[in-house]
Amino acid sequence: MRRLRNVKIVATLGPSSSDYETIRALFEAGADVFRLNMSHGSHAEQAARHTIIRQIEQDTGRPIAILADLQGPKLRTGVFAKGEEDLVEGAAFRFDLDPAEGDATRVCLPHKEIFAALEPGASLLVNDGKIRLKVESCGADFANCTVTTGGTISNRKGVNVPDVVLPLAALSDKDRADLEFACELGVDWLALSFVQRPEDVAEARALAKGRAAILSKIEKPAAVKAYKEILAVSDGIMVARGDLGVELPVHSVPPIQKQLVRGARAAAKPVIVATQMLESMIESPMPTRAEVSDVATAIYEGADAVMLSAESAAGDYPVEAVTTMDSVAKSVEADPTYREVIEASRRVSRTTIADGIVAAAREIAEATDIHAICCFTQSGTTASLVARERPSVPIIALTPIPATLRRLCLTWGVHCVLTETIDRFKMAVVSAARAARAYGFATEKDQIVVTAGVPFNVKGTTNILRVAPCDERLIFRTDPE
Image (cartoon, rainbow, N blue to C red):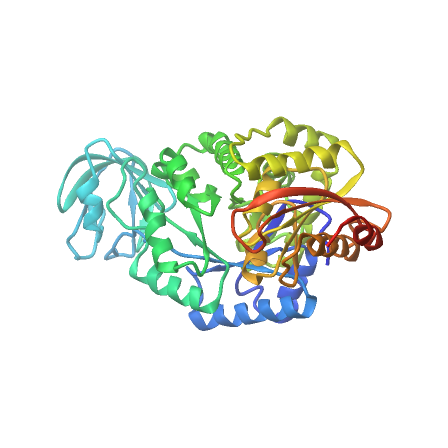
């Protein structure tokens, strides 16, 4: 199956999408990556979904990426004697470590780490920011606050602390267990929640031991401030706009989104734009015009992927949501303005031979009648560098390593093809020509660009570029052994 678009679609699986028929329909509608949300569902349920995805992969002959999204530490209030209380603007309210049931004046906040980091003037947000409080005074086991935005507070509501870096690891005990389970299962990507500093990513990478690539979710102000350092140690990025919009003023999220996408593009690392992209399609077969515009904006920015959350996991119209996203992507990418925007936003600092090779490949492809750029890759780096260039012709990544292909399913414009192990450049060119013809990117009369590294099967050796015919007879006739 050949995708007729460059941006990838990530679909979250859940109660609405757990059987073979539905997941297969999601894949055929356009999903390239399936997300397993470790915040919901048992290990047995996630394992069953993983098995189905791998069966679909086998049945269709196309690699599919699986992303396990770790929950991260969840900060929640205790419980109330009446189940809920109304907090009025201007009223005093206290959080403390006392496990007694709460009332209209106080409630337990069973996270001593929060109190250790709080300072007077800091904000506490409850229930996705619907209730806001300002810290007036605090200590090791309490915070006296003033309600700045009132509302109804009830049992175990989530708490956000946007103004301080919390002395909490990004991985809770549950996350460590989920990470090991997901890696043993054989997922391709791990999404790390609650990232505040590069050390959080290093901890996850040490536990993963190379079994999965690490994708950092940028959802906290501290992560935005340390983005450059976090990006440097991550394999990919997710712009998690839900929590960003809670902890930061909502009007600041669009420019932050653009900055994060451009930063990841420049680093040749895949970036997903996520959260509430087609939210209304949880209950409606049609999206709003604003949602369609939102998806289009992320695609115009050059994001590698756009993501569906509850729309495909728990909504009434999961397949329709993927179909809609696919249609929006194709419409945007067919717009001449799209190429203008993509090319105008191409800011690449080229410092290596590989950088120069992929840049030359794009320029040759766009200046002549080239039908595809074919890159042989071990780790996926070469394909990612080609994708960073955002060429106007298809990218075909060829590798004998299934794990590399699956991880590249998240990368913009990359069509993944499994090959046999190759030890001669001539056979690499032949394999590229065969792949370009087999998947309908070119005919025997066309030409392709091939990039590779010599010696073969060594990471980080991209050093050769060849313009080649797709007619194998011409390849054998012109290329000596």
